Image (cartoon, rainbow, N blue to C red; front, side, top):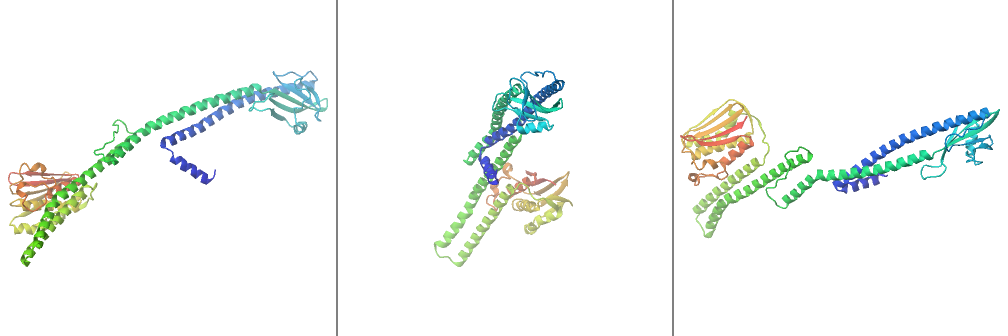
Length: 459
C-alpha cells in the first residue's frame, strides 16, 4: 500500500467513533492471534501426519527394494498402497493392478531417479478435493546388474481428510471466538465510555446555561475515567467560583459606582444649568475631583479584590519583617502625628516568606481603619511563633458594634456609625482576601478597651 493510501486509511479510521475503533482494533488483533494460533496447530498436526505417512512410505519402499534384490514376490504394502517398477527408459516392468501402465513419474523425475537421486512428490491436492491423492517415492535399485527404478506410493486420503476436518474446525472455532471477542470488546468499550458520554451530556447542559452542575462520579473507584470525573468536577467548581466572582464584581461595582456617578451628574447639571461665578465653578470642580478620586479608589479596590480572588498561588519571597512593616506604616505616620495620636510598632527581627505586594497594603488598610475609626494609641505587633506569622493592629476606640462583627470582612460592609465617613467598605474585605491567598486567617474582636484585628499566616 502506498503512503497516500496509508494516510487515507488512517484518516478514515480516525473519523470513526471511539467504540467502533476499539471494536475494530480488537477484531483485527484477535484475527491475527487466532490466525497465528490456528496456523501453529495446523502445522503441528500436518507435520505429525506427514511424518507417519513418510515412515509408512519409507518402510514400503525398503520392502520393495529387498523383494526385488531377492527375486521374490513384491509385497502388497499398506492398505491402498501402489508400486511400479520401471527401467531407465521408462518402460513399466511391473506394477500393481490399480496402476497398470500409467506412468507415475515425469520424464525429468525418471531421469533424476535413474541417476541415483531420491524423488518424492504428492499427486493431487488437499483443496480443492481431488481423487486418487498419492504420495510417491522413487529410488534406483540394481537387480541382476541392471538398474531399475522402483516407485512406491501410498494414498493420502486419510491424511487429507483429517487436515480438511481440522481446517473446518479451526475456521469454526476461530470465527466463533472472533465474534465473541468482538462482542465482549464492544460491550466493554460501551461500558467504559458510558461515563464519558454522561460527562459530555452534563458539559453540554452547562454550556446551555445550567448552574451549580456537578458530575455524578463514583466515590468507591479510582480508575482513569473516575479520575477524569473528579478533574472535571474541580474544573466545574472553579468555573462556578469564577462565575460567582464575576457576578459579585458586577453587582458590587454597579451598587457602589451608582452613588458617585449620580453625584457627578448632579454637580455637572447644576454647573450647566445657568452661568456661575468662578468661585462656584471652582468649588464644583473640587467636588467633581473628589468624586472622581473616589471612583478611582473604588475601582482599584475592586480590581485588587478580583485579582486576589482569581489567583491560585501568590508569589512568596523572603522578606525582612522590619522592612515590610516600615513600608506599610510610613504613609500613615504623619497622619497620626497630625491627629495627635501615637503609632507604635513592635516587630520581631525575622525573615518570612510572604508576598509583600499584597501584605503591605493589607497592613496599611488596618492602620488606616484604626486612624479613621478608632481612638488613642495605635499598636502594630508582629511576631513569629511555631512557624506562624501573627500581625495584630489594635486601637483604643469604641470598637465594632456587636452586630457588625460577623460581617466585618464582607464586601461593602460598614458599621452604621461609619457610613457617613470616607471609605468604600472594601478595606477589611481586602485584608481577608490577602489572608486567604496566603492560606491564613484574619480575626476581628473588641478587647474591652478598643479593637484588635489579627492576621495569622503560615510563615
